[in-house]
Amino acid sequence: MKFLKFIFSTIALISLSLLPSSAIASETAVADSLRSTLAMIKNPSDSLKTLLDIFDSTPQDGKAPVGYEILSIAERLDKQGIIEEFIPQLAILESKNEAKLDNLILEAEKINDRQQRKGVQLFVNVTKAVNEATYIPEEDFQKVLLKYPKADMIPTGDLYQDILDLYRVVIFLGKSAKSNLYLEYLTRLENMVNKLPEDRYYIKNMFYTTAALNHTQNGNTAKAIEADEKLLEIISRLEEKYRKQGRKFRKYDRYYYISYRRMLRNYRGLTLDQVKELYTKCAQLAEKDAEINDDFYNDCRPSVYRLMAEKQYADAIPYIQKAIDKNKDCSIERELYRIYVEAADSTNNKTALLEALKAYNQMLQERLDSKSEEAYRELHIRYDINNLKKENMKLEVEKRDSELASGQKLITLILSALLVLAVFLMLLYRRHFNLRRECHYLKEENKELNKNIEQLLDNGSPSGSVDVRDMKSKD
Image 1 (cartoon, rainbow, N blue to C red):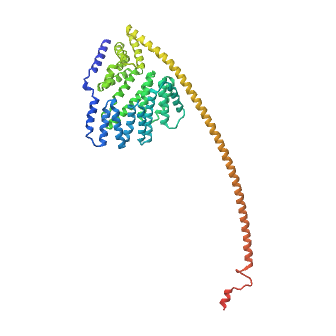
Image 2 (cartoon, rainbow, N blue to C red):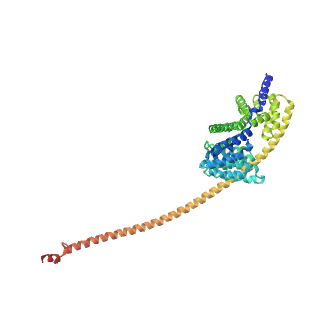
């Protein structure tokens, strides 16, 4: 029965590897064909549509010049959606060029929507931080590493700036140590990223790629699978979005494959049916894409993970050996040797087991030494961060005391001013009261004067006098 299983598996794998070359479309040929029609198009909007197809069908290493053409036309036509899409794409393509990343941050100022603009600039700044962490001199690393946690300790109230401050810490910690301290910051970052709207997919895509990879490397199987599942949801939504826009050459096969392969790497957290389904999806993608085809049949890791999940250890050994030859990433190589030990031991293959154990023990020793250094670095970083927190708390207390003292001075000043105002009001009131009393006296005197005048006057004329007008009328 085992022999029949081996024959069936071998036939299935060989049949996939013998696909005709016509089944794998030439991206370059399609792009060149589309480029030849571009000269005949005069309308900028039509040129933009063709350029989008050229970009989508151009191999990864040739996309950047086309991307800049698209961005230039999109800015002239004020195509906001395309500007928002292509600045992050160009940031990925120019991830090692700091000057061009700085220029893309300036280009993002042309995005009208403030929140989208901040999101795109966040993406480019994070890409820039990755580049900085990769190429920073060793003597400057610790200084920069502590600069970013210090910024992270002071919330700005701006979600995008707070994410950037924290993301920089995660990036630099990831280069130095990927143990508990790193995972603490990664979890904090996840909670903040989840607060972003769904249309900030480019940031979430970047985060879940980081999370899936690092959880996988740290053996956090459940978290790794969860991150890849969220990443696949984002990829699926993007695929649907661009299909509706008529972007027929826009393909996500490469990204699907990387996620499927990484999930297979965490096969211990999957059911056998899930493993088989993911393996089948990888094989189907290998039929359509030359790069995926090369990885699937030469790297062999998907086959290794599937056979190990099925406990077909004897069948897995040749694929494990081939995968070891193709992978020089220390994390993957160490994992493959661990699998090699398990497969060789399960089949009682002493020759393979001895080879695997010798290599694996050496790698474990190197890893142990590395972990010791990493643990020391983590303690040192924790100590420095705690000192920063204490310093920050001290500054906060001093600031609060200063604000309190300033507040007390202000209150004293205000109370003094109120006291002066109260005295002034009392004086005004007293003056007003005196004026009213004098007015009252004057009114009374006026009444007395009027009364005296009325007594002196009879019918308006003094007694004993004659009205001259009456004398004239008699004459």
